[in-house]
Length: 363
Image (cartoon, rainbow, N blue to C red; front, side):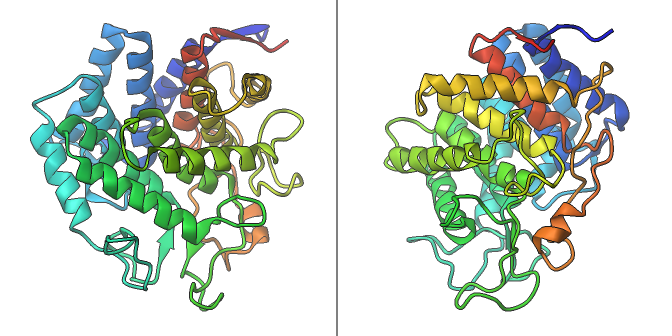
């Protein structure tokens, strides 16, 4: 029998445990870094020493090089990516400072696009090592910005924070659709297109918007109020959350193609958006009346989480499918327990707990 009420912290924790029960702990990939980030944040929110120590033990094989990494665009994924940077900052780890500085320097001195997409005084957009100078995708905001942010905060190095801001501004300028405020996913994968920009995919993919939004959310959450670009980052973040809310369905969730309710409900993107909404409420960047939209989304999400914490309706890995058309994104499968779903949904429920929403009535 399904419960009539669920505890938000228990849901957040059980999703991460489910994820790691399904895969080898010594094989890494970027969805695991999201789940580790979510687990570390839950430990910090609850100030739970046991969870914090467990998280440390889960991250240690990444830090010591025991983990074999089979999916990832950036070298710092090998050491646990955003999760390690967040955890190190949260516990004020002096021991991890040299490792984070090494990887921040590798990242910021690494490959950049040279397609004229310059960002102020910066060289240009950071690019994955195995793409051409003409290829970008919104997922890179997740891959770079939180790592730079948390490392910069721990190291006291504002240059990393400045780089994070520049990457956000540059990527949003490329991928934001001015007509609806949503983000497209990929640029330069399907041949020539708009003059001066190349071909940008037609989609408004839910997790693609989420990959961008997780970076904006962490900046809104943790970029110091004294930073020169704080207000600019807040506006970019708030504008995107507001744009996403316009496409929330009657059950509080978002679809694979966010502008098409005839595409399937997609849980990973919905999780990221709900997390962002929770942070916007915490930071008072949105009116408190929007709390009902968060509650509606969490109730809706509960119907896609099994009693054994299995996750349903998560799009499989996706980077410019087919010709990058909306129909190509809508055709992607959503297998049960796809690893991309656990971390984003856990973040949403842990943020609800952080707001004082300890349980959700679902009956």
